[in-house]
Image (cartoon, rainbow, N blue to C red; front, side, top):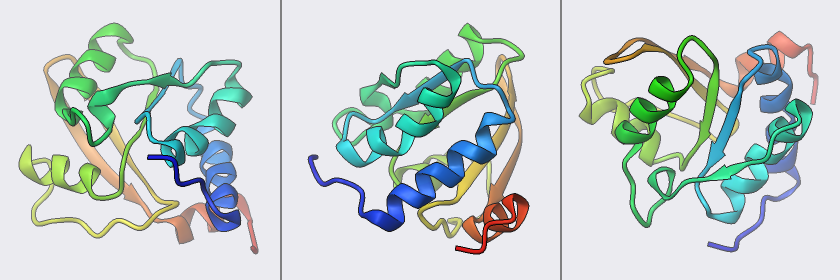
Length: 139
């Protein structure tokens, strides 16, 4: 619960913030666990938002499907960001039939979901190497 990001994780969080800032999210939510909060903080700060802690994104009461439904309903047509755990996200995508097979997901990567009320239309994995390339980041 209280394990902080290491230097590599902080760099990945900054890279995610730079990539997602372009989406102009109106909500940045995270699992209450420290690493998720720290991952969400750079983006929330850049957007002038607070990180909203949500147990549905964490291990204590995981329910990513409900979080997605609520976020889409409450912010129609707007970008929202949910920071969860690297094993919960692929499990959610697989169990809900949004992907075939269990996707490989590395820290510092992201899944972009296009959603409308009632359904997720598209899921795209953006690997951390692709984020580095997109941002011209050599580190």
